[in-house]
Length: 82
Image (cartoon, rainbow, N blue to C red; front, side, top):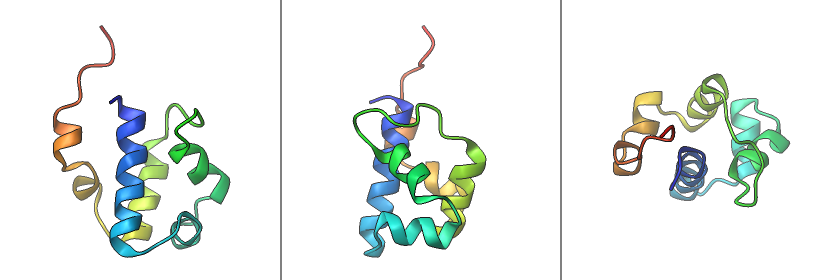
């Protein structure tokens, strides 16, 4: 799993935990729905979601950036530049 996939999976996981749709998260976080859909699209979409956008999503979810990234998936990501 690469970083983009990990971010997408984490967003989807957090929405499921809260019973929240992507559109509801977009509304709560003031992120355009198209941006959020691009970030979570498994067939491409945004390759490099910005940290400011991720912070806005965290605000909409009511969590910190630290909570967002504090999972085994992010701790175990391999270096992307070889």
